[in-house]
Each structure stands twice: as C-alpha cells, then as structure tokens.
Length: 225
Image (cartoon, rainbow, N blue to C red):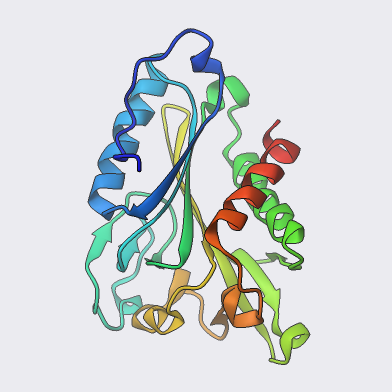
C-alpha cells in the first residue's frame, strides 16, 4: 500500500508521464491535503510529474470556499476547510475520490474547460459501467434520472470541486460507489436543496472498487489524451 506521500525521484521522462496512484486503505483527509500541496509545488517547480490519486477517506465533511454556515446541519464528523471551490460535501468509505494534479500551463490555461473535462471523464466512466449520468444547468456535479431505477426526480451521484494554484490543479472528483448515504444528511450537499444523493449500489450497480478504478483509467485518455 502506498504511504500517500507524493515525492519520489523522477527522470526527465517521468515528468511528462501521468502517474496513477491507487490507495488500498483509508487516507486521513489532513494527510491528503498536505500531500497534494507538496505535489502541486513539485509539479510547478518541474520536480515531479502529473498525478491522479485514487483513494477513500474516513468519514469527514469538507467546506469549499463558498460554504455557507447554514448548510452545516449536523457536524457529526470532523469538518475541514478544504480550500477548493464549492460548498460543503461529504467524503467517506465507499466513495471513490480522485485527486487530479495536472499542469494546465502545459495543457492549456483554461479552468472552465478543465472542469468540463472532469465532468466528461465521469460521464464516460459511468457509461463504461452501464450508467447514464449527466450535467444539469445550474447544478454542479453529475446527476442520475431516478425514474430509470424505480424512483422519482434526480439525484446526485458525483461531486466536483477543484483548486488551481500557479496553473496546477488539485482536489478533483468524488463518485458515490457504496457509501452510507445517510451521512449526507448532516449537510446541504453543495448547497443544493430539493434533490437527493444516490450511489451506484443504491441504483443496483454493486461493483468492486477495482472495477471503478479500471473504468476511470480507461476513460481518461478519451478526454485528457
């Protein structure tokens, strides 16, 4: 199992090759923040290559830069200031988090396009798994039409929250595979009311995490090259 620390020695070729890091255990949130900070600085200084870091966290709530105090309903888990964009979200076991550290100065300094690319990456990943999910105007994240699964309305299956420092990205996406959905009741997820939160397991797609990771990696080059 990886120790979650981002720094190793890299050859010149390594600096232009994307590194996939997959954790098998739970990574404490504060350790992930520190590791991302270190890796982002190393990428900007030309000391390390880009990275996609796949992991799970112990149960936590995280606050983005737009988080509103009234959207914290029940702080039953530790609450962290994440520094990313967006509002409150939940991370916990059964959720695949992907922290994406890319050099946008090299790839193209367009944050709006980058966020759209993250969304498309998730859409294609879920399509690989036989799940139709999509964007919704005025609502962040990816959404499922619950009428397809015997429910009603729409529910969120994935969240996106990013930060960019000196044109290097960090934070990223979280996909609900099989988390305890009751844990979302402590917050107004991403400040959006009137819609639910769902997971792959809740709509009948019970899949092992390694299959999720495989789908994420297969979809990646179709969006990011």
